[in-house]
Length: 221
Image (cartoon, rainbow, N blue to C red; front, side, top):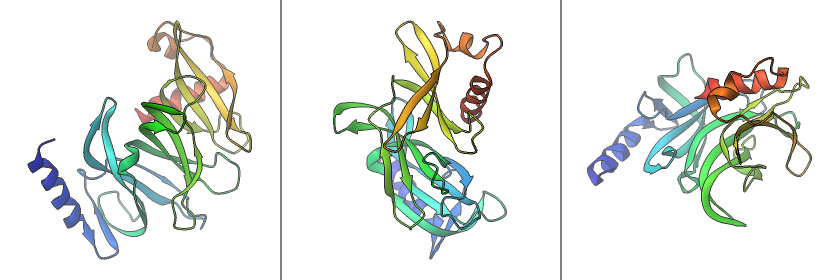
């Protein structure tokens, strides 16, 4: 991105902020979802705004907003919390109660290094924002295998969200399911390996959790 484009993006962001309000536009709504992440019983709008930086997986985000949902996406929203996340290079945002504590966590799919993994890669990060702070729940260096994408969904019908991950294997691609085990995530199910992603999506008679996983991942793309 050019210096002019970066300056223009900054100017647009300044215009979007209005006291304790934030004006959502088609330009600054990079990725978003709706979920109750504050624990007050009402859904909030969780919004990721774009930065001037790009990654091999697309544009990276800049700020994470927790907003009053309002009536429509486009328009002014009251700011509940705001966090600078540009150093994480977030690519998308989602939410789910993965650790079964009754409050939905915010998950950022990020592109960065990790303490024991110095190369840049996509990584799944989870945060609690219910107390107005960005509190780390799990900053995973990776899942069992490098992943193409992941989504949060109730894969086993227990009323909580698990991770559904589309992953790369030695001879193709597979789906994996992960549940919380008090200290992190454990892979408890995986599909057969398929030569390409198209074959994975067109497999015959998939198990119920695989159907949910495929629908959840494809629904985010």
